[in-house]
Length: 287
Length: 157
Image (cartoon, rainbow over all chains, first blue to last red; front, top):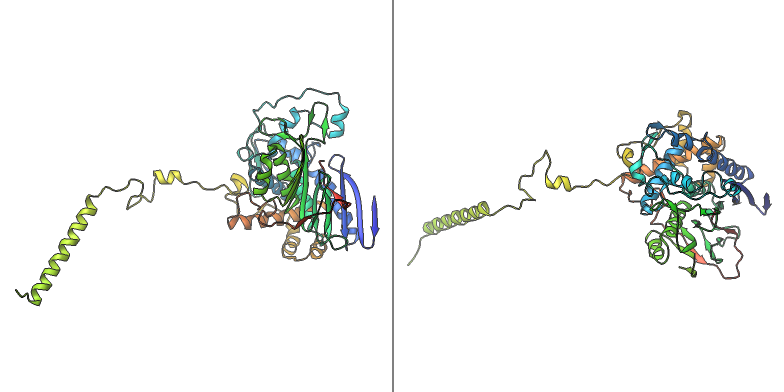
């Protein structure tokens, strides 16, 4: 779906296993918007874990060997290492095996259609620390044997930032990972709805939400706690974070959700959250 | 009693020798701290060397010795150079417009990796923003009035 109104182009599309994505661009041509959509699909094809032909799947299949990687995969793997450090290990891309064990072994729509299976604990105790199992060099990378990578929201956040940087005034929303640039359509900023129903007006910023309320199936959900190797048990249902980039917001939101309230408040502030909103099991809080 | 100039000089010289000698003797017999030898070894291991911790690089073990970002299709190098030097969004769009989707992503990833390496070389390797978007840069954000209809929403996907 695409609409054009007074130099503003708005397009909604589906990617990343059915996630709702949206592009709003002011003062650019429709070719640039088409490139955003095309590149999102290209990114997904190259880095999805649900297709054995993708570069990420082929990389996972060669765990134990030092193999060549593209500039894109190499960059994303380095980003995963940095996200691990920023989140004190709570955002751990080495969670692929544990996600499979938890039942998330195919796209979320197909998981939901399948009869429920009991979640199994990963054969490993928790998820191994990412820096201990992933090496990234110049054009190559190596995973420890038995390990596999799931980029998860880190990939979407990174891509939203890159696509957003192509415009002076735009909002790119990739399944809830959002990057805004410029002053918005009316010059007053971009008004973004947060998980608690309130809204914040931002300029150049990243916004992301993490939680246990979506990508769920009978007996499980997609938010895996690397400390246990199981779907997270947290008192935060959803948390939205505004930060300097979509990637940073994504990492902070996921880490905060896993950490739980009230510890997440201070943890977020110490790591560059400009604003955050939480829905916790005992009520709604914002900071 | 009067003392001649020559005698004063002699006393002074002898005094200086005595003071220096006693000081040297005290330094010589004073026990040296084991952890701070006056002549530290320049090779081999010591307790100090063992205690030194080299901080890890942003890119893990392999990146610690890397000089460049990654390998790249040589045909994309001109685009990488131009993209890295572009100062406006419209310039960046124009540079990558003629490329395929995969090539655009490769160029953007490569330039991003180059910038990360540059940041890492200046010591920004602490997870504070080299990869995750500038932790020291706070975006402007204000609460919208309660009745405001958002232009766009963030949500769990």
